Length: 442
Image (cartoon, rainbow, N blue to C red):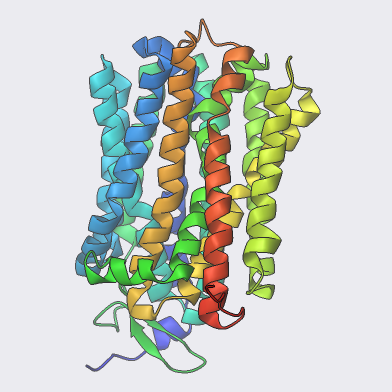
């Protein structure tokens, strides 16, 4: 196989930066769509007369579709490239928000979240593929990190302007406006983004230091590849690291944070939005710091970074729910900052996946790893809603501090299970790498 000249990739010019910028902007819009329900969860419960379990189902369905679409998206990316996949993803999100805007019932609203989850699933993998194709391979880790950090700004858009627009206008106008933004980006992406430089005949990534050229693949091997990836303890360590670190923050930002802060803790909607904004900004700050520490401590990531991040979250979470009355505001800020460590710490899981898998199995190992956080978030979101309902506190009128204190016990077993498996698989990984002696059986 021959490759065309590599200069556009070796020296990314203004077009590469323009394409990346539009891709990142599309990712910001995707994050805004993803977290839009979390900012207006109480309003959604009122509009659809939904109990806590049903409200949780909105988020659970959205995340389940997002996770389930990762394999098909990878296959489609390998076949068609980033441009059509991001375009379709933006269109599906716009359609989902339009359905949500006019939805008369819970069933149709859930269908809207299905469309939203499917569209959201397409954007981030496609943007990462653009990074691999348009920029030198050695710039990839930094570009991916910047992509993730900038994308999180979408949560701020969902928290403040979206909630303000809803309270100033109406449900239909608010979600119709998001749909309109999605249509705008559908057109922008189709006009600006290109799969690869014109000089290339396929999607390749180039290491300009070594001259190595590698075809970019996104698809997950659903047969032998998954079994082979899972067989390595390093992949299982990656899975459990991703399972344990980000799910509480996801559950908080995606659905239960705003009701907890307003109905249970007595904060105003504006104050609650400001506190959750601290969570978002802190995560953006922690990202490069934890990323650099992960690079410097390749053999101590779990003990030095992952488990301490989980410990901080667990301690802050328990401190808040253990109080018999509303927590002092400073402690709620501590909780927000502690939860913010989860997202950056979860990226260490992908470092494990890259370290312990050959390049031809990397997409598969990454997909397996990514499933961990979504599985934990699904369980946490649903269990919190179920525990609220079982206490007879499933609607905004009946939300209470005592009910949330019980419901917020749900994440604790998930943290414990995850930490146990992190310790087990870390030991097995170190033995596999020859860093620790294999334990002899008696």
